[in-house]
Image (tube, rainbow, N blue to C red; front, side, top):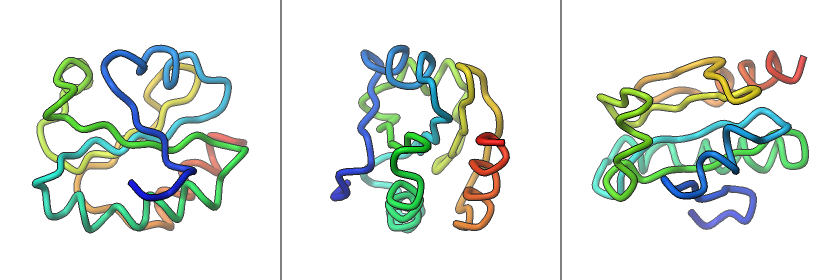
Length: 110
């Protein structure tokens, strides 16, 4: 993604970047060829900019990083999962609006 606020997660960095993060982490599971994934990308970038410094936002390519996709039973993309304290706090499957994602992060920030 183009935004400097959007992190790129991989099988290799997922544990340290997502599960061990102090702040809530919103992860967009998708793939390059997926049109709905491309449609949600601007929303993910907006959320990343809005929550910079308070929550981590990033993407993971499920084609290139199959282990994490399998671990979290990603059967449809886009799927967006909010992690808090290394645990799944909220899961959205399909195109999800900015307000729903922001509300989940706000709740996680408490």
